[in-house]
Length: 192
Image 1: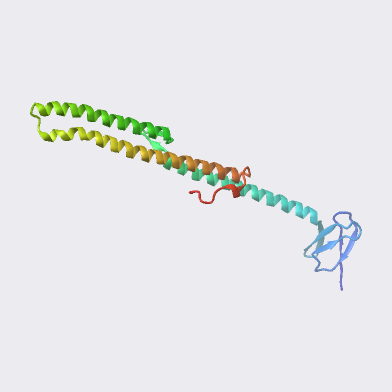
Image 2: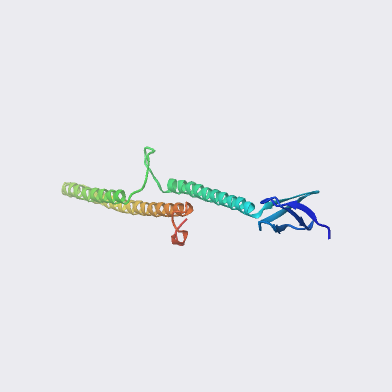
């Protein structure tokens, strides 16, 4: 069998290897080598160097994956955040809060009760003076304020709760993508 001559890339010793050989161990320094064939030229390279280069590339690819995952999570959070934020009449945008929902509900309910009391006393006096009985419906508008206040408060409270859950989920996923938290600890039933 015809052999080709190559030099050990580690110690420089001459080696004789078959032309089809891809890997060889140097008989002088025990270095593990990869045999490269390009046309009539043949060379060797330390397998450890290739492994170190490959490991470095794998690490860089993993870092790029993590960075891309974090960027994707950030973009998704921006979209979710915009969907869950509260938009005021003046164009102001704010984060929904449970306290704000409760406060708004209390204000609307108190206003409804005050409306009913004042409108009821005015209608009662007016009916003694001949006001038509249809005016008795006027105090019931207070109930409308109360119902709208409670319904709006429940919706706002629910939105605030969804916002808090979405933010907590985003923060856990981001920490996991950065390697700061074990991804197995993230509940699988979280809403995306």
